[in-house]
Amino acid sequence: MKNDWTVLPSTEADIDEVRERCRRLVRRRAAVSAGVAAVPIPGIDVVSDLRLFTQLIDDVNHEFGLSPAQIDRMQPKLKLIAYEAVISLGGMLVGKVVTRELVATVLKRNAGKIAAKQAGKLVPIAGQIASATIGFFAFRQIGYQHVEACAKVARQVLAGAENR
Image (cartoon, rainbow, N blue to C red):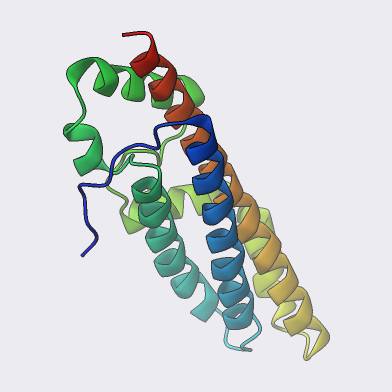
């Protein structure tokens, strides 16, 4: 289990460092997703993506100090700023306990890419390569969006802390 005592990054430089670390994590997980997508068994990649993405969201939230447990320990004013930032950005996975159902909702937004990825499995070799490529870029795009949402929330909380 992760140490939930980690706090929000305390400077812009810290936020940038966490952002880059999380973007590397997204790329690594997207590569794993692509590897699974290359397996010519329809559906296995969807199950794997749900698991990988759920873990990714939890890890990114934690790195930014925005896991539910970390937000609960913030001072009331900062907690309010964090939740207001999440709502204003529409970052539905920031600061939330992530469930497979919530991740499935996010992945459904990219249903066209997922359908193309599954259809690609029906064509040998070229289809597997296309499926892996689509899977990598879709996973990376969704992951990057979450990292950027967390970075924005962290910046707003940092600005609120500096204005106290």
